[in-house]
Length: 357
Image (tube, rainbow, N blue to C red):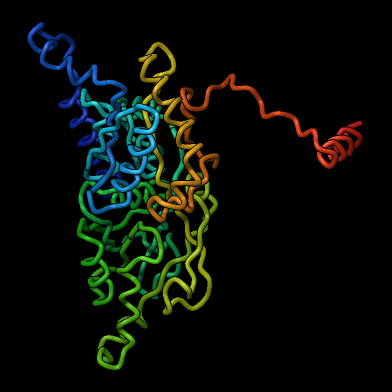
């Protein structure tokens, strides 16, 4: 019941915020004159990202640099994260693009709200970016995710992508904690170490400084805290249900020295998204997205070398679970790749065709 209430409250807050931000049905001539300059800036696209100190914002700046090379001005906007970005993409704000956690789609689709389900159906993936691993630090009496039933869990702050992932996983796995405490991850980790909470869920690219710092509890000067670390561990996260929406990943001793053996986990992926402009929508905006997509492909080697370090993990062609690809960037009638005409390629084709007969 608690899980369903939390899920419903979060979804309703999202829908209510969208309703407040939705564009008016009509606009006065005066308002039209006042908004026209912003709407007609040459090749202007807005992208909502994350906090200015975070990776989403840095990626937005790199994308803007690529856009500038082809004459597309991109306004990089900070935000509170995935949920905020979905609200703003769906508003009257100039926010054609956003970077979100990949599981936001499943979160919206599972909502009971018709507006949330509609938003989910209209979202499209432009490109997948990099992984953010799911860390579940729990008391050692808890052996797997299902054991979180009836327990007290720290799930991150209100409105954060971390909270979204936690609620999404509880819904997917039909697990109902007795308490979902919305506090910063650092406070959650301390509460678990002290035995005040049973687990903390934290989504971030490994190695996470917060967990790396736990290694210091084994130092001689911190010997009184060492027994606390011995009472906690990371939970394995490899249930097949999870892998329907999340990517497989792992946590190893190379990431955190208190991890005994390699541990399976899952990862969300940072994804650049937009709404579907391909059918009866804004044709000019669709063309801009297509041109930006081509430019990002062309400049990916440069971004891997000179952009944010996380660009090194990016595979723009990766498939991503439930997500539909944007038709502007990934047109359904795009020509197929040219056939391999090399001698080796032809030999392989001959073998394959022969085996078909």
